[in-house]
Image (cartoon, rainbow, N blue to C red):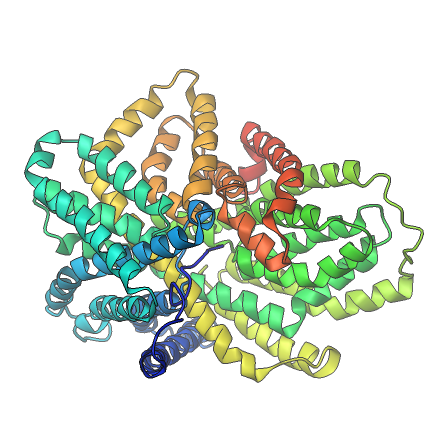
Length: 632
């Protein structure tokens, strides 16, 4: 999803001697190339391996028994190298609402604190990661019959690379005094906790509040990337209050990042970038515009519809918004739409389409709770449609008096031509869905079918015949971007899995279950409390960390109080989406503003109406379970 990164070379480079600046930049560039190229190749390798598995099993009836195992080995390397690429590019997800409003000197200091805190976690976890990899060397993989250290070594290698990038970032900062102040601040806090360790152990479950609310919350609000904030809180809890070997934390992180279903995350991210580059998204939007462009508020309806269609292809909200906004916004502004209203609606459609398969949040929720991915994919279409209707009702009200005298209505020939151009692109979501329903491919493998389809259609139909804009030079940057975004997401999942395990081991999950099941009003109260909780969590933590952290705790409770798990999944995903795109904390809103190139202040007022429309739609979905489970 949306993210905000630490500013590169925090504090600028003014005042550094040119030779030093040149040497540091050269080292970082060389190290960056050393990481980015293998990460890009790993994305290609995963696509080839999984697609070959589909062809061998479905077309040749000769399954490749080693394909999933090899894909799993390479996947952990992709996750860790991608996380290193994200660190170098300052693309790890973090909450910047407070940092962004600080004065320049304080902002520079907090950015350096964020880097120093991340470095501290990497240094603390480095030896346990090495121990974990060494222990894994005694395990032999079943199909390939090789030592599991070939897979587990990705963890210490990725940690070491991120630590090197952190050190380079600190070295490149111009103000040495600020750098030392940031490093000493982090060291001082860690030192105080270490000295107090004897006093912490007798506190029992009060330590959960100290570490998982206090430390994690402080890190998140101070702008420390979410993954590292979670990691520091969990490491501190385990190291200072329990006797658990810290190698166990690395094992939980590995488990969280290694679910094979999560392999669809990088593949769907790449698919989203591919449909944007080839012009497939542009063709779909143009067809919708030809149908509705002459209606009052017509292009706003097109924006809602286009996000619904594109979400079913890319799975990543940032990719969805980047595919649709540049195509529609210029014409909408020409018709008099205010930029603030445009980003407000773009944000609202981002929240509305969270349940449309193959959403990364759906995939994540399935992997951490055990709910069927196919059932989630089937159940996600109607809830989003309900929210699209409530949004469209508000669009109708707001634009019922729009002046369209200067707008020319598309004739039947123009509509037919737009449809013919868009048809291969519109077919893609149906190809993906058909492949899953008919059992041709798993939810992980289906993304490779989409990539192959998009590549062939994008190159031969759109690249050679229609738009002639297929740019081979963009493929490598797209692969690197895929690895970076995927690494940032997967590292959060890994660290949040470690935190969730720590909470479970402490007995917190049993306490939470008892409290939630004891609420008066039964399932209705449970759903209402969940909606409020996930709107808040979505705003503060973003979607995926909140799901990984609380999904394993709350889904068993939902089953206990009689709420269908797919229905509950739709409710919490939509609630989380509303929080994610709600200012002032929701980072999805700021991502929409960045994509639309609009000042966030302009969209604050109009977005509240759209959020209210989304909440009305969510309440309808919550009241009528059939909307989510009627087609299961």
